[in-house]
Length: 90
Length: 242
Ligand SMILES: [Zn+2]
Image (cartoon, rainbow over all chains, first blue to last red):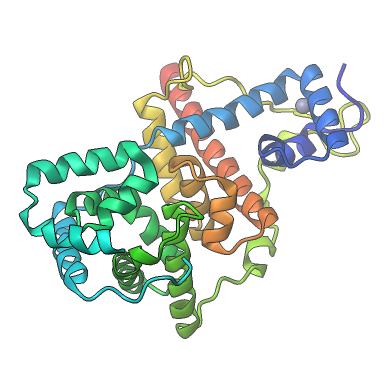
């Protein structure tokens, strides 16, 4: 019932490589073969996906209005300065 | 270049209304419009840039330098270099990539001065039990006659998991807390990748990591966060039973 060559304990260490598309084709095939036969590892991979989904819903950090004002004030000063010579690759 | 100079002359007369309009146009128009607005001295478009990148710039700077104050200095210097050098930006990369290249170079120099270059050995070395994605005790022994290395205490589906791909506030809170508690390098990588949705390439360049090391850090970070959320789920289940 469970694919022979990949143990669950090995699979959990390959999840990130799998999701990042970094597994070689033969290992990827073994990974997917294992998932097709092992509902526990399906749950595991699903939980890692849930972590990624949840993390992406974390609100980004905001700068305090005071700190933003400080930067904007500095911006006015920087911009009024003579700009450096152009045509240097960036 | 001539056009730029003309425009910066007229900057003084731009009122906040049109400034805001310029900024929102700049956002919609992507890099090219944003760069044009910055060159003309449009303050609102600088505010857009700050809003988008300040937090990650601090995060990346902290990866290299000794403390928060030094990181803030690096970020401040970077903003100045970005604004003063915006005329030199040639659009061959995204403005984000360009900005972070400036930041990384500065942070590296400063980090070397403070003798705090990231030791890669610190990333891969010392494969402690903590670095296993899952507690080894949850698997059958490698010599088990029937199920070597297979789950003996498998994970169970979470009550708290995202319904229809929408994360619950409670789950978001637990994940955020778990990320905050990670070792610094893991925290930086997972935040940039999974919270701020950077590509792995962007992260590797900004943090001067190889693809492999970046994946190792991401893997350990995600595994730890999963363990933390699992613990939270178990505790919630226990409370229900009690
Ligand atoms: Zn399995």
